[in-house]
Image (cartoon, rainbow, N blue to C red; front, side):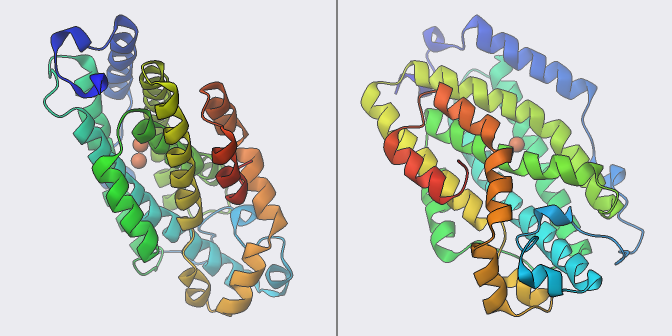
Length: 304
Ligand SMILES: [Fe+2]
Ligand SMILES: [Fe+2]
């Protein structure tokens, strides 16, 4: 495809150069080093939640009402750790997508330098999430085998708008949760700091992902757009369904079967996802990516 060649005539246009330059400036002005910004020293205070309780997959269910306050807090800590671990998995995929995208392109371009800046951000984020999950007292949460293999294929072959729109979806879904958690005084302070760092740095990534998605789509033919719309929707489905690992219930001392059953039927959680993803869906619609077959996956994932 034209978008992946390194010929001078296919250099980023003036608009894309401007965007990348502004993102680089913003990154120089406000970026964080989680190794020093996050309080890693203070021992975990179990009086706090790991996430806003309203974001728990069990919030609003009969099971939730039966749980003690301590159980609810343990559950949200395990859920926050699972989201962080899934975040690491996304970030590994998107670092490779971005690195593949800039392979052998012109390093003097701001877009190239911004891409490397984004990869460096993600690298720091993943270390931060790994330390955070550990501090929350959680084991390694990894996605299902099928999701892992789909991710392996995606990071190896996805390109253009498929890569950037999938990156955007992962970042937006994390963003809506983390915006709530970072402001919530019931959430343990070090997790609030982690979420704050992530929200600030990811807002630049999302800007870039939206720009790149539009730019790549402008060069895409109809068939390519139709195919990529479905690919992006499947990626979104896998992303959303991998967010909370079902092991969290056992690790929070709950009955796994009952918890999974009630979480899957949890209308409160589904409507929370739908309302928080409204902006994302609007963007995908405006980009022409909400095709009929794609819509089926977004509905199944309760994103719309
Ligand atoms: Fe990140
Ligand atoms: Fe990101």
